[in-house]
Length: 165
Image (cartoon, helix red, strand yellow):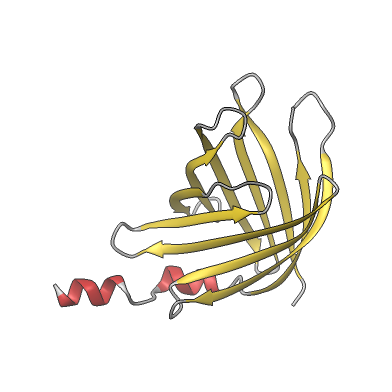
C-alpha cells in the first residue's frame, strides 16, 4: 500500500513534460460564438508554474474578452494511478468549474482532453473537448470544441501561445 501511495505522489516523466511549459506566454485568442458569425480576437498573457511538489501545473491567464477584463486559472496534472491527464478551469466569465481528462497522443504531439462544463443558458453540463498541440518548445495551440447553436460540435476557441520568457 505504501509503495502504491509513494508512486501516486511522486512526479514522473509526464509531470516533467508539463514543466517544460513553465514561464510566461503571449496568447492570441480567437473565439467563435456562432460559426455563421465572424470570430472575435483578443490578446492575453499566461504564466505557468509547477506546484504541489511538481505534481501539477498552475496557469494564470489575464487579458480581455468581449471588451471586459478576463482572468482564468487552470490546473493540469497527470494522475499517476489512472494514467491520464486531469485538468480543471475557472474564470471570471462564469461561476462553474470545467473538468477534463485525457491522454497524450505521440503521433500528433498533443494532449486531447474531454470533459464537462456548464452551459449558462440551460444550467446543465455540456460536453467539451480540448486539444493542446506542442509544435515546439516555444509555441503551443489550444483548440476548444463544444456544442454550437445547432447542437453540433464546433470549434469555439483557439489560443496561439508564444513563449515570452
